Image (tube, rainbow, N blue to C red; front, side, top):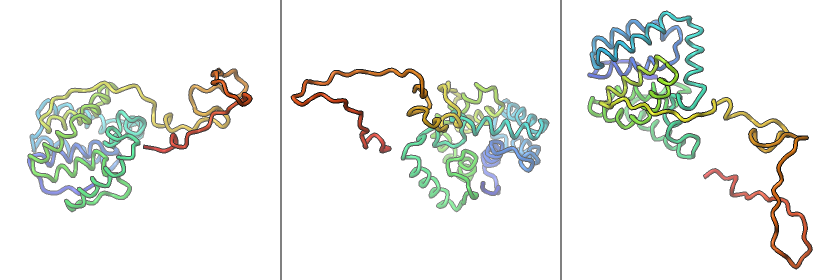
Length: 244
């Protein structure tokens, strides 16, 4: 992520919120008291919202470090509904995701900001640090454009009773938007959705009979033909294998 520097009306708060969404390793946790003080000093957030974030900070300070890190991975890296990569919510696995990544990375470069090695441009903490470098009006507008994604994340985190929901609520407050959590659709975990089907276990991991089990056969009557009838195997349409 980018280095911290001089403050604007929302700069400190945005960078604290970005840091709170980062991986809670020992270095990050060592700055929690300072983060709390920065939020109090800038007063960009309402007292009620700061109190909610205080609960998260207290949890991160007092909890078992290994459990905190494991819970973070389970929460943010095991499902699409709570993914911190914004384009996961917008483009999914479509072809548009790559060009969108490039465009966003170029936006950072034009502003003189360089991502850390291995960090993707749509990672929410990185996006927030970029937004923090913008004038207040532009920063607020940028957050407003993301409000539908922020509300989706807010709803997913609330559904999991996670204290991290307070960070998304704070971002919506800075954007001047109401919290309108959307109920996330039921989904598989990323591990399940990426799982390979078992060898010789059918054409997919779902809905196919295993070898040795009965499998439904659909009989289709072919139109009359002057040639002798014969069994016709289904042929794959090569176009179906092309990703649009």
